[in-house]
Image (cartoon, rainbow, N blue to C red):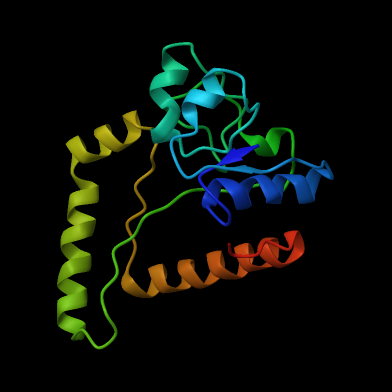
Length: 166
């Protein structure tokens, strides 16, 4: 199982799969692009963010076995979701906007409003959907809770898998 490095999202996503299914995967961390070795068969599996591999999937060079979100992805409509095979499995890559502690609340509210407006733009939604992404507009409080929940979930995987920094 290739990943972008120890503790990366693809690494911990694979470890979560390993924990739930009870299979022992050999982790191969990369510091560079792992796709050439995946295409060449040097590694057999990767839990990759969809935008990084969707072009290869659509070109028929890679086969998507499942998506790890809880719902099907419109850009890959024939690809099943992992929970159809592994109940309880969910792993998603996400991005958010943060600001340093102490930034005035009115600035945080304005940044949040503008970011959510961008995510609501039909062209942006179409572009992100084509890449296999799902916009997730939230309030700052909702995003804070989301981060806390994700941190707790992945901390458990990291502890159970005994992942250590390099």
